[in-house]
Length: 113
Image 1 (cartoon, rainbow, N blue to C red):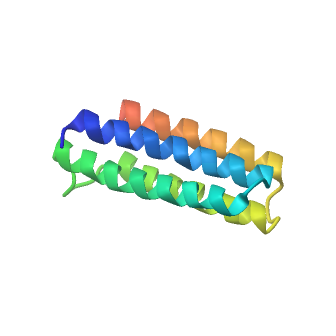
Image 2: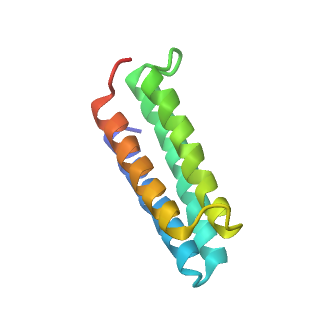
């Protein structure tokens, strides 16, 4: 598959992750929202590693890629923390927005550390 195809899948996964978070926070069909969240995470991780392989940097992953993996884990746990009321809903939205912006920055600019 081509690099643009992996990129497109990655963006679809990101959209599904945020749809899942928003749906879970609205409490309308939270179970289905969590399903979309999980599907989005799966699509994003598979397409992300596909892009790394296409770029030829899978063997020696740069620091920005490791940071993105950590931030994806944060996005994965946010709904759980919100559902258990560990973090207030407005804070979950703020954290999700900041993490999403950081993921976009790292993916687009691929900074060297």
